[in-house]
Length: 266
Image (cartoon, rainbow, N blue to C red; front, side):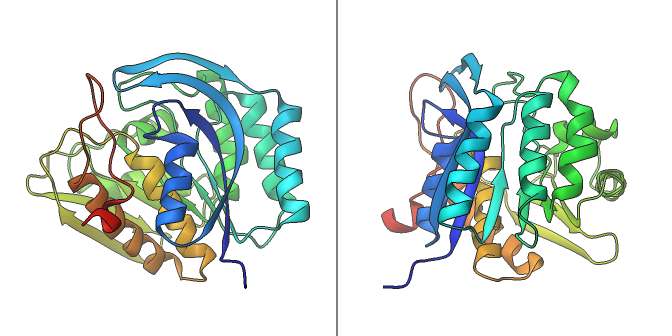
C-alpha cells in the first residue's frame, strides 16, 4: 500500500494529552496523514495548568529530526513549543536544510492557562530565524503582541498585526482572532500581504478549548502535505478546529481539551 502524506511536528509534550505533540498527532490521524514527531520539551501539565517544563538538549532535537527526515522523508513540518533561543535556532537550522517542504510555525508563547512556554530571550530568535522559514505563521493575539508589540483590540487592528508579522519574513500569516470580543463569530485573517482571506466561524460557548492553536496549525500542515494551496488548507483546518472546539469536553478540574476525534464520534 502507498503511504499517506507525511507530516512532522516539532513541539513539546503535554502530559494531559490536549495540546502539544499529543494534539498534533491526533489531528494528523483524524485528517488522514501520517504524523511523526520531534520532541523539544517535556511538560508536567493538566487541565489546571503547567506544573513544570524540561527542555531537551539541542543534540537530541537534531538527532530526532535527522532520523525522521533522512530515512522516511516529510511533506510538511509544523513547529510548536520551542522554549529557548538555542532550540529555536537549532530547529530553524534544520528547516533550512529541508528546502521545498512547507512549514507551519505556531509561535507558542503562552499556554491556555497563561503559563509562559517561550523564554523572553528566545523572541528575537523567533523573529530573525524561525518566522522567515514559515510558509504560514499562526500567532494568536497574545503572541502577536509578544512578537511585534501590536495590540489587537478591534477586528480592524488585525490587518496592522498581519503586516507587522509579515515584516519578519513568513510567506503567509494567519492572525487568529479567537480572543477578540467579536460576538457570535470567531474571526481570523489570512494574508500574504497581497491576498486577504477573512475566515469566520460560529463562536461556540465552550470553555474546553485546550489545544486549539496546536490543533489548527497541525491541520494546516496536514492540508499542505496533501498538496493544497495555503488558503484552502487554512479554510479546511478552520472547519476542522471549529468542530473540535464545539465538541470540547470537560477533563479534570480545569479547562478541558478540544475533541480531535469529533468527526468519528458524531
